[in-house]
Image (tube, rainbow, N blue to C red; front, side):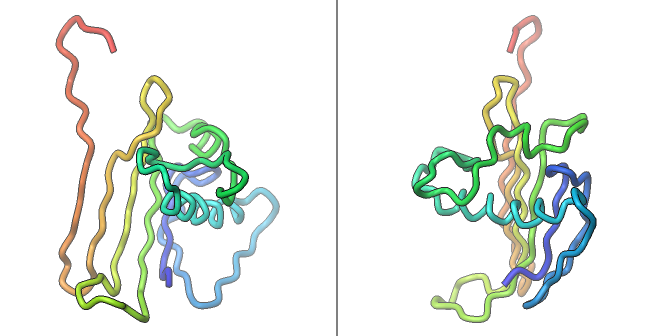
Length: 152
């Protein structure tokens, strides 16, 4: 079960701050206040995780037979007017049943996505932290600096 959600530069949200989730969570607000964006962020993660194409870092949709939602292009989910070219989705979770002894029972997942100048989406940073012992798995994409005078 998700226990919290945090979005940055996602659709209408600059930064949601940590949003506490419970077994029953009501999302209330005026029209166009970002309620649907909270749910869509979870759908985006779900269809990315369920995608059979492991070369896709973020499944924005388009396959009507398998995808839950078609987000279009990355610019349609990135906060309008944001100066940087990335957004992030993170959540905390608590599992009630584990099949294997070594599985993470509770923790935090965070992913930051970016866009290259050519327009392709990539994972900028990915982090999974175990609440029990604090162990953390983290990867970060580093983009090597271009030699002087070269063009990207």
